[in-house]
Length: 431
Image: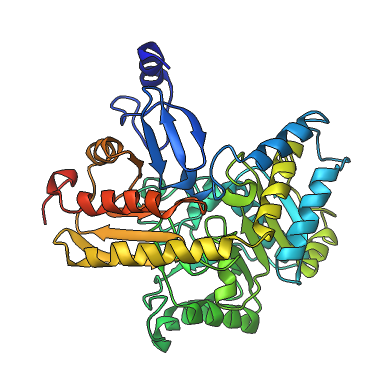
């Protein structure tokens, strides 16, 4: 890429969460391998983001590349209406095998946000088929489920990404965010407001939707598994469906294959994405029980009313199969445990820094929460100058590296974070 390309990019290409009139700087990546991103000028950056948490096996993995190449010689795409194909069947076999026994029916779509839309439509159509007009959802403050309209409606309404849309979105019920931390003693009153809301409005509520254990882009918060256990028990008691959004947490990120396993619960609907293809291309899965699927199918419509054009794309299904095969070789538990241990050792001492409000670590996730928001342009320059790619947001500097990262490369990331939180010029205001 040359300066002309970058000028065109600034003038014509709209990047996520940035302005067209005053865009944040963009760094031109021309190749990626393992955990390294190579810039056009030859510099290399250690990727601490796993491309927004998706590239769990790193970049340019030969087996993932081969899966795409082999599938390409057969067909890159075919519609899924009235047609099936081997890659979709193989992927769904694996998904049914590795998820809880009750989850039997798989709907494949093309992004995490769409998986949420699909799950919410499933819940609405389930109750419609039963002759009940349940049209609202119960969720948690500080949650995040995506940027499409129904997904935004169950994100924290005070979140800066979504507060703009207040008044345009359907109104749902929001329980206070869990306060009892993952590794703290359980406090029973933590779940009381949720249980009260559910009991008061159960006849209106189609489903509870939440991120199990880890609230991701809404605040990178880790809550006690007992909260999730009690949410599931309350849903069962009050006859309400439970949707688990594991788009960010699925496939080992929290130290369990799925975050729901920390609480030993099975949701009625499970949403997966991000790492499903090992970060190679977009694909999502919404998996539900036979009861939900058959209730919808026996309703007035006679089918589930959703069908994305690129549903079950063969290339995406083929590479997802290979990504799951890599996971099933079972190296990830040791990799994630080692990352967790190193993140704890390197990040926890940062609690003593004046700019730091909190430090949290779970599995291959490390979070440093600061008192003040970062200056995004300044802190990105700071990190790139130190040979690392870390993209904070708000008051959160966090790491979610590929599982294959070496101890030395992870040390480079944590050292850069440690230096950043000592430099007040990287933050928008002083405490």
